Image: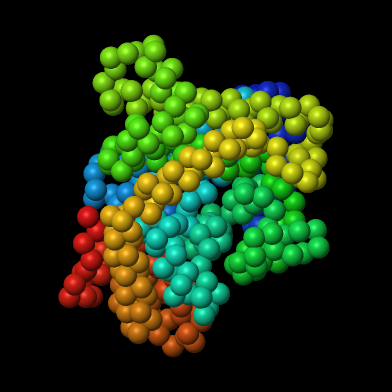
Amino acid sequence: MTIDRRALGFGSGERAVYAADPWTSRGRLYHEDGSPTRSDFQRDRDRIVHTTAFRRLKHKTQVFIAQDGDHYRTRLTHTIEVAQIARALARALKLDEDLAEGVALVHDFGHTPFGHTGEDALHEVLLPYGGFDHNAQSLRIVTKLERRYAEFDGINLTWESLEGLVKHNGPLLTPDGVGTRGPVPQPILDYCELHDLELATYASLEAQVAAIADDIAYNTHDIDDGLRSGYLTFDMLEEIPFLAGLMAEVRDRYPHLEPSRFTHEIMRRQITRMVEDVIGVAQERLLLLRPESAADIRAVDRVIATFSEAMAETDRQIKAMLFKRIYRNPDIMRIRAGAAQIVTDLFAAYMANPKEMQSHYWVDHIAGLADAPKARHVGDYLAGMTDTYAISAHRRLFDHTPDLR
């Protein structure tokens, strides 16, 4: 039986002219025949969901260590929330929803155990060997470290998905070849030698909505988790005019609402206002620029899917509050110090005796390597760990493991 792919409902005329088109994708590094039932971007999204890296997000810290409570966000629940917001933005702007969702689902693959604390610690010990960058690690995972397919390493995503993964926060190079945020991590440069991701241009609009969806999700849900933990109070939220306005709106409509419902009513309004703000800004810029293709989006010298000036100021105020009240809270800093010690200790132990990396598939070949390639293997192994596995590994190797409560 022959299947008419375009008649299935995906890749139809609902997509705007400036949206990424799976039918004209730049393809994959390793050629594969197309699916009769899914677009290439659908296949990318599905492959991402079925990876080991995606499952590991379940036990990786977002802000609060998982053992603090079952209701705090993990990297996995955060990722799912980002994907939902990205898909909503993509639908409103008539983009390819599957590409936007795929970029959102893969954007945190490279994060270490213990959130940004683990990343900072791993970067510190890897500095003599090129350092560590979670975005570059995400690329390594989907192009090299996932070992599932018979014909290639990685999961062989399309050019558009890889571009979105690497450039969702903007170009990595200026037109003159200078790094926009410092030197471009070597793994990204190495991959671009094989499959040029055009690091000096902006990514697709689908990747841009995934990036701003990340900001919306963690701004909102870190507040939610902060209130649950007690590090934030409603009085603290009153210090930010935007949040104070939302709370007044909820109180006026529901004057006797219990705290948990009150919190949710604030959060859902925050997400809605931020999403609507981004849609409004993007529509204005699209009307002004009148792009006729996804290539036109990449050629523009600024981001299209972003906050208005007023919402950007609110975004800065929220981030400053979260930084002061949560991320730099003395209790959190104590936990962070313990988490950093676990990562640092494990790195030293594995460099001294790589055979302690019991489940690493390269373990029998690492001992004879020079320090630089050996350190990268150790970094890959550590970055892939969940919080729970890292704590368990440390307890096996050391007499004392920091208490992360």
